[in-house]
Structure formats: C-alpha cells, structure tokens
Length: 157
Image 1: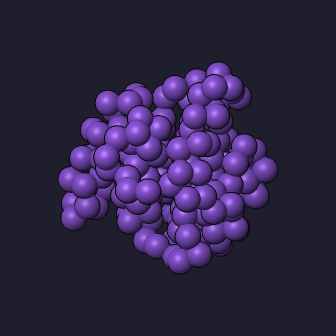
Image 2 (image 1 turned 120 degrees about the horizontal axis):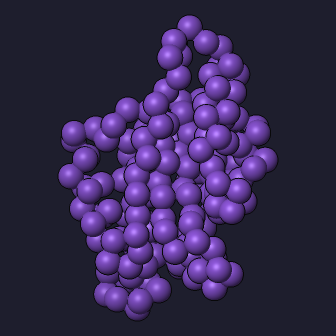
C-alpha cells in the first residue's frame, strides 16, 4: 500500500527538512511513499478565508483518485494514539486499499467539500502546530506505526 503525504504551502523548511527526509527514508523500508507539496493559489493574500479554502479544496479534489483513501488532518477529527494508527494502517491494508493520502490543509484548514470527501478525519492533537512541524510529526508517527506493526524496538509500550 502506497502512502502519500499532501500539504498545501511552501516546500519543507530547511530547518526541519533533514528530519522529514530521514523519517521518509525510514518509512520506505515498509511502504512506498511520496510527498506532494501543493501550491498555494495565486493571489492568496487577496482572497477571503473562505475563497482561499474553496480554491484549495477544488485543487485537492481534482488531484484525488476516486479509490484513494483520504485521511484529512483536521482539528475536529478523531484522535488516535500510535498503536491505534498502526491498527488503522493494518486494517486499510487488509481491506485492499492501494493508496492512503494524509492531507495537511492550508493556513485556514480544509474546505468543507474536502472534509466531506475524506474517508477519515484525524486530529494529531488538541494543540495547534505550525504546518511545517505537522509534516515532521506526521512522518514520524507513520514511521512509528510501521515499527509497531513489525514489532520493532522503536516504540516502547
């Protein structure tokens, strides 16, 4: 099963790029992965919050395949622990899912149309994090989930 990380915004910040690439390389031992950094729409600063979310949402929905399992990172989503995430990945694999897309929205979150399309809404925490940090947390947690699945030493229960 392929794992894709989609994020709206700028390329990885140089201060955390190496860490993101390190965890991404570790994940590749278990599953093919890919990062897609989706561009912020042109003239974003001149758009209202709703118009910006709508444009971002339209772009996301156009990029998605109909059979892709979409996991939207959303502050109102369900929280999962690391073991729960590992179980989630195993279940999706057992169901024959070919691709999981973990989506990090733009500065104002995700458009309602994207949230309706999402197969799952996941909240990393009640805390608010910068988007660049979310990328790192997401990569680390997916790596951790695979080490749990494989019963490797990285995660301490």
